Amino acid sequence: MVSSVLIDFDGTIALEDTTDLVLERFADPEWRQVEADWVAGRIGSRECLSRQIALVKASPAELDALADQVQVDPAFADFVATGREMGMRMVIASDGFDRIIARVLSRIDVLLPVVSNKLMPAEGKSWRADFPYFRDQCRSQSGNCKCVVFGTTPGILLIGDGRSDFCPAEQASLVLAKKSLAIYCRKNAIDHIEIGGFADAKRAILAFCKPKDKTGSAKADTTGAFHA
Picture (spheres, rainbow, N blue to C red):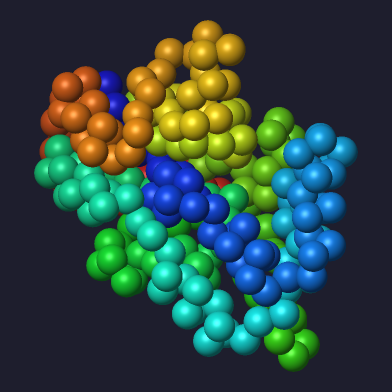
């Protein structure tokens, strides 16, 4: 039985990868070579993001203005409301950055716990990436190890679309998959439901998940594990 929901942000809640938007707008073009090294598997996500964010030059106001332009799945807020009515505990787990995520969620008036990397101001208009949820043993080499967010909690639904979701997909009780996560699940014989967005996700939880109590709240401790 599903009792908790782990939701990816970039490409899932946000329709585009917000880190790529920041890099395309504000970073030295060298970020693309760093990206190529990551895609080729020569470096992990943490090293990739750390090197790329070091190439960004932007004021806090410029970053906030970009976040205000991020397009969100129009069915996301309704999905959250439905999940709360069913008593599900929900948390956003992202290999993106807290400042952008918080700004987007505030704009759409959705309050959920967030476990993510941190964007820290440096000298002038520079920034650095901080990874409070990185773990050396992370099989996907993500800056934010989503498997740690799982902890030992049973009955978790994963909703995601990309590489940082590959490892937790192998542990989830139910996977709702978009894009490359759906391809990964098919190739690795992982049971999943392919979705186009949160309208499909809502239909899936109504069909496959039984309602529990209606606490409607969740939090994540510093290890990332779910708690009621």
